[in-house]
Length: 86
Image (tube, rainbow, N blue to C red; front, top):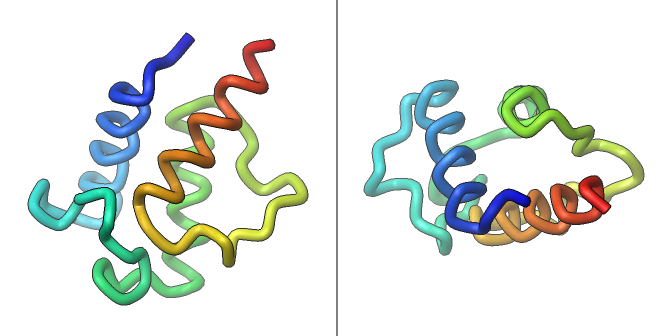
C-alpha cells in the first residue's frame, strides 16, 4: 500500500515535471488556481499526468471543484489509492 508521504512525493514530482513548479511552490496549503495559476485546461493535464503516475482513474464521478489545494489533491489520491487496493 502506498504511503501518504509517497503520494505527496510522487504528486509533487509529476507536477514539477509537467508545470515546472519549484519545491517552494508545492506546499500543502497552495491553492491550485490562486497560488499555482492552474486553469481548467491545466487541470485536465494534471488529471492525465496523475492517472498515469498512479495507475488509477481520477475522473469517475468526482466533483473536481472540491479540490482547491494541494492537500485536497493529496487526500483525494490517498483515498482513491486505498480504495482501489481493497
